[in-house]
Length: 282
Ligand code: 13P
Image (cartoon, rainbow, N blue to C red; front, top):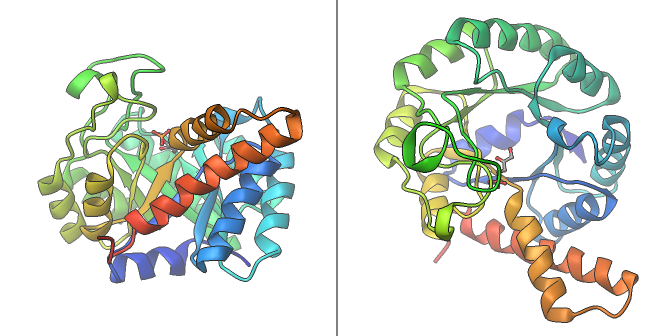
């Protein structure tokens, strides 16, 4: 069932668990994520990132996402991840995405507010939910290093800015930076999460909070994030790692077997994260 993210994330916030937001790249990964969601009878935020537009087009992603979402009973959100510009976001809305992210987190505060408000005004009349980011979740080791904490270009989210941002923009959910970064981490070490900041943010902000850069963060960290105020957890790289692990173990003899191993590798990761993100994990 295709839905926006409103009710799903409010329920997650109220009941202290995290909804997985896996990024799909093709028909196989989208189908795998939706099938696992149906198997667990739990919603997911099926995400397509603008950064992957050269792998499949937005039109293809919309067709795949809508078809998969409508083919199951469990609620599925079709979400544009890291929307970079208004034109692309408008296209996603017109194509039937039920949720969009505007990522202007590298702009200054005022510009981030201005762009986010513009997207909210576009999306809300159509019943589409909006996520934005304040502070900045940087890149891990794969993509390069910048300034900031522990070899990433991340900038922690401050409570004051986050409160003011939500008030000024009316966003439905807010991505915050509390220690993760996108991609894998140097030496495969789990990052240090600023739980004190998370607790302050969760107390001060009514909108559900989102964690980007879920991969490689470690199960204990992710579980604690989920029960202490993060309602949506974005994961991408771990699915690629899981697919390759399965392929390397199975050593498929032909292309069909290779696709099957890749799908199974991704399914294992999502099954695992459904457990980790739930309140009663362990
Ligand atoms: P990872 O690749 O680190 O899991 O990050 C995914 C993400 O945050 C997508 O928005």
